[in-house]
Amino acid sequence: MKRMGKTITAALASAALISMLAACGGKAETGKQGSQASPGAAAAKPVDISITTITFNASPSSDLAGFQEVDKKLNVKLNVNYIPANNITDKLNALLASKDLTDVMFVEDLSYTPAYATALDQGAFWDLTPYIKNYPNLAKYPENIWENVKYKGKIMSLPRVRPLDGQNSMIIRQDWLEKLGLKAPTTLDELSKVMEAFTKNDPDGNGKNDTYGAVFMGAPNPALPYYMFGTGNNWTKDAGGKLIPDWWTPQYKDAIAYFAKEYKAGTIMPDFPVLKSTQVPEMLAQGKAGIAFVNVIDAYNRTVDLQKSNPQAKFTAYEVPKAADGKTHYNQSSGFYGQMFISKKVSEEKLKKILEVYDYTASQEGYNLISYGIKDKDYKVQPDGSIVQTDEGKKQGYPDTNQWLSGYYNKYQRAEIVGIPADVKEYNHKLIDAITPNSIPDPTYGLPQTEAYKEKGADWNKKRYDMITNIVIGKNTLDDWDKFVKTYQQDASFQKHVQDTNDNYKQKTSK
Image (cartoon, rainbow, N blue to C red; front, top):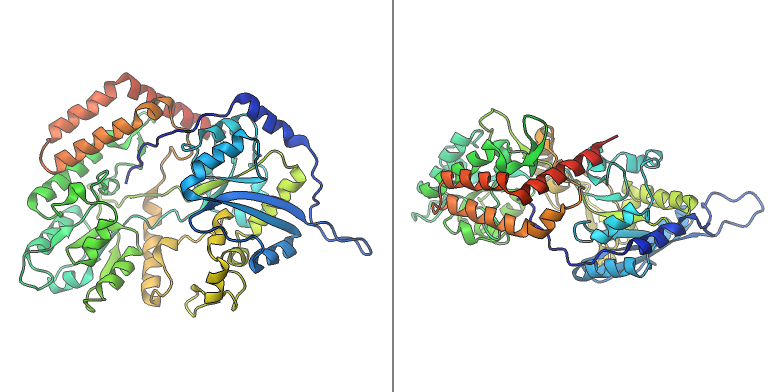
């Protein structure tokens, strides 16, 4: 799915305000490093660390047993301020405008809160680039994540890590394949044949013509797997090395043509233009369609749904079919959701203590303490290694407690879930390993939105989405697509957007 334009409502903080924030950076902190006191000396006072972050549920306490264990181990006192997700943007902007910053500030996306980009430019937050290498658990995060989180070529925040891969896979009704004597498709032509068989050959055996090859979300935008045609990830480079939108490529046009052909053949659910994301799993669970392009773990989740009424039903996740170039292609995710900025109000000594906390909680041990509490009291480890929260742990507020962490990196997070059978888990892990070498990052991760995009991006996206949908359902032609692309290639505002994106990219990647 391509990223939609974001409406920016918050006003930028003034340069003077940011300068005042930055100016606080030289003040000494009273908190000490937390090293062991010498014999006979009083123990060092715990370092108070204040953190502001997001929460999607009730705000948990910072005095839970898991927090206390981390406090004791690192000689700190953690104080976490949780902001409800539905109010996070306005609250973050208000905190910045009032100079009421905590030591660590969560920012969901600089596009939502551009005042924080201005604050970064004015020196209100620490540049972490020279420090990360000294913290082994943080340094172990994949290099691509550190590249994606950079701001103008520098590591200005800690990423809240998420897996890079696993969001792109093809899940198929395995029982339908076996009933019809078919194999999982490995090419686009084979995919067409399987989709046709699922549509016309009564794969569920109910004697009715009521199944379709595949289901895709169409609203508010057509979420088709363009990437598997080799389009690039949101942006790609032309022959001259310049970044261009992926939808300018011939491969993107090939993708639209392919799905238009399939829609005309009746192998895609006809409700495609109006189907929302929540309806895709519903259609799969109801046995209406046999193929979807979703997370790896969704094959297991949809199997669980189906087997409530049909014990023989089963989805299996596969690699996507090879493109015309004979290769499989995937979009790599950014590898993080949200960033943690450290205020320049804190001294370098305290900065190092904060990084020590984040390094420890990037280990499995530290992450579990904050996320799940005390082992065997607040959570239990199952024989397969998965973690199950006890009733006591749920009552305490775990695992909502971990929203302030950068996190423990698990590359297989989108391939496993509590209760998944060992053989399915092992299969899914191997699938992630096969996907990883063929996934490519979006080169524009971490770049600020251009002024042209802020002004016109939502309109540009809507027109493109409408054109794609209309071509797929036959209202427009591929010739119309060519004219559409050419219009934007010649539009002054869009040309400015492309040029500014390239300039920002060069600034980010310059060493």
